[in-house]
Length: 88
Image 1 (cartoon, rainbow, N blue to C red):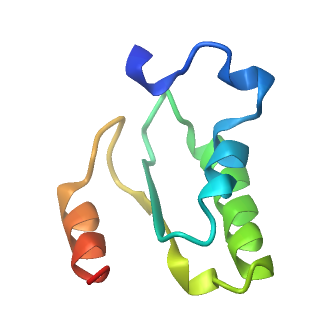
Image 2 (tube, rainbow, N blue to C red):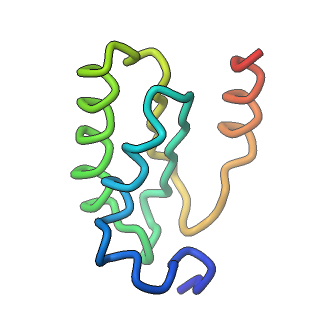
């Protein structure tokens, strides 16, 4: 697992998706590989709808992008670069 993905004591504040919700209404991309063993598909199936609902309730549903791709614990450069291109 990547230790850089965890902040000491973070779980006292909330789960990752609960903390990410504080970014709303700012644009946010959350992407996860199907085979990621650190951030599992099951976790994404909980986190992504939660975040989408937060953004929708704040009236900024267009500012969140969620994506599940074929891959593991990695960054999908194509997805990230495409998302940045839409943020102009």
